[in-house]
Length: 539
Image (tube, rainbow, N blue to C red):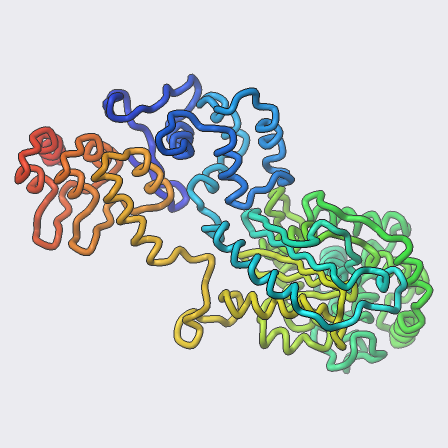
């Protein structure tokens, strides 16, 4: 019997005595275990073994990108550490499986947005090493705390919409997010006052001027929320009736939610330095109030302090990548499954990041790289690839436009290798680009070949694994021969029985018009002939 769940074929029950125990050394199903969890247990067991080892289970999680600090599996890794023996019984597996069945199914079937995570992250590691050799740029010097950061620091983290993660270099070190804060300030203001009121106050066009230019659009508004004037206006609208401490706690807690409780901090020294060197921002704020671009009762000092606090938040690449993945996932955190922002808010934010997020390089970034991003003078770049993943690159040396030199180079190399640009169409001149979210035809073909080999060898465990990972049980090779044909020809009774019970087509014809039954008759495999004739009678 076969059942389809979420578009993937999974093994269901192999009932009672359907398989001869001598041909298939299955362990006994524990009380309370369903057939699916037992089938998944067997798929995890190493070839030639009868029990799952803790090390192998852990290895499967790690290779899929499900890391130890993932809140979905923290207790699972704790159970691994406390496990008294090297092997895990079916009962112990079922107990762990029941804590997050959906995630474990994905791991075992490799049913993630980016399959083959090991291969993908190895490629990203190679890009990281290449970009690490890039020099140039200067660390931001207008704030002493930023100027003291080593120019050699370089970290990258990835997080997909399914919570697969990887990290490279200095990905766990805190850095000042600076202007990256403008993205979330915009989202918070939008959800607090509504998008219509917000955009009566702030425009949504690139300014064509410097990020801190004292200028407004033709309707008397800051051009967009990704420049200083627009971000100050956003801050003026966030919980505007609350106390200073409550307003900042609201923003800080939102960053914690976005990062699934990851590393988020506040640097008071940076905040004080920001405030001490804020003449331009004070000029902007008074200019906005003079032109009616801020609410009438806006307290300039309090609003600017709030803005500087938002810019003085510190995060790691790891925590920022999860926040970016939350935006990539339409506002739902992939590690907690908690909705942080509405999909409409996220859509608007990503649109503005795409057109305005990279200072005076925004147009070039959209043209060359083609994904939403936001940079900050702390050296961070938050990148969002919608419905795929978020990433964060941190490297303090900046170019003349205030963007991380290595951050820009990493993004260029990433989108030159992978089809992440919004307008990439794989094929033609882009034939060399890889779509990592697509299972390639060669992988599908390999699955067919492997399934036929497993059927010919009577390797039921491997057949289960391949089918659970999406191999078509009725797929045929070049000659039109299915696994059923091969097993019938090779006299593999258990393979034929398994294929019949799991939806294999006993009436498939090869390129010469032969049925599996005819192959069995030709070779005088009488037990298989009886099995296949039984299928004919049932039909």
